[in-house]
Length: 91
Image (cartoon, rainbow, N blue to C red):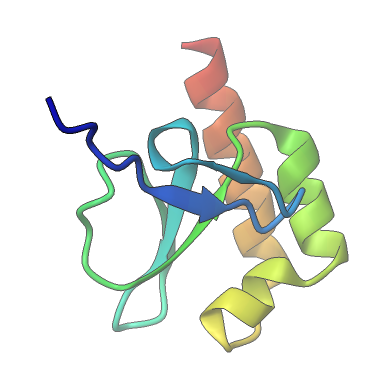
């Protein structure tokens, strides 16, 4: 049997290549709003990040999301994403 190819994506925080299913997709939609995308199917430009706060902090410090989205990411977006990550990890 032929082995299926596993899609890899790079975390914008730690810069490690990981299995796409292990990472969380952050999406910027057409109207400029940011949100977490667990399904990987939302429309818009996406960037991937590990499901922990440390990688989000690294991405904020290194401006990884700004580079991925080719646009400025407001500080409130990082705070909202951190709250959503913490809520999902505790659920």
